[in-house]
Image (tube, rainbow, N blue to C red; front, side):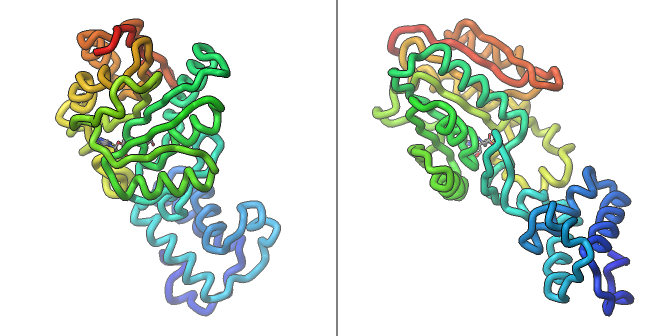
Length: 302
Ligand SMILES: C[S@@+](CC[C@H](N)C(=O)[O-])C[C@H]1O[C@@H](n2cnc3c(N)ncnc32)[C@H](O)[C@@H]1O
């Protein structure tokens, strides 16, 4: 970054000067939300809030502070997601620690949580204990947001990634909720203690196709875990393989909720109606895209 490079080495930067020059530089390089990126990086480097940057706008940075900020900025210029650099993001109005071992929670996934919360409040009385299983928990954001918002829920969450579960457990501890986390490949046979156990199964599976994956922005493709994204050749592999397993986990009269890719509703509907699910409902996100599938399992025990 030329303005911060050697010829100006001796310059004492104030917070506002550094903020302005960084925001301009990131905008030139086509970063979306350039100023917000600059603010959050500088706030993180200095251990301040974004507001404090402005209330201390004329404070000069020490050379150590400047070096620390430049190291963070370099990572962002290499297109590392801001959330990984800062190590935190927000989901369902709650803070979550994230690392490259977990997918960064997306705003559209909040709709999945909302759907499950609404379903549980409308379909279960306050005295009911609601057994909920989350498949592919990543940072734990879905299971933890559900535990925070459904008082009578009993949460179990699994992921195939050991590293992801370490992050998820830390997040559950920070939010003081009980979630039973287990390392498990959801596509392999499940032990008896899980069978016919759950009132609700919720899952944001890997659903990106090979061709979509190739065209993802570098922030996602080069940094987020492939296992959290790739759903095989057409993106539907997880849905297909899991369709025979899901009924074995559900109680009679249970519900399952999936997040889906915007063009997958018809295929997912077909896969799961063939398996015996009924009342299959597609819910759109705020952008009007098909995003959630809700479905009913009303068979007796498999
Ligand atoms: C799209 S990410 C969702 C993460 C998190 N629930 C969220 O919504 O932000 C999918 C997650 O599923 C996990 N996963 C992928 N295949 C799996 C499998 N066969 N069994 C269990 N978990 C799996 C990945 O490790 C990843 O954490």
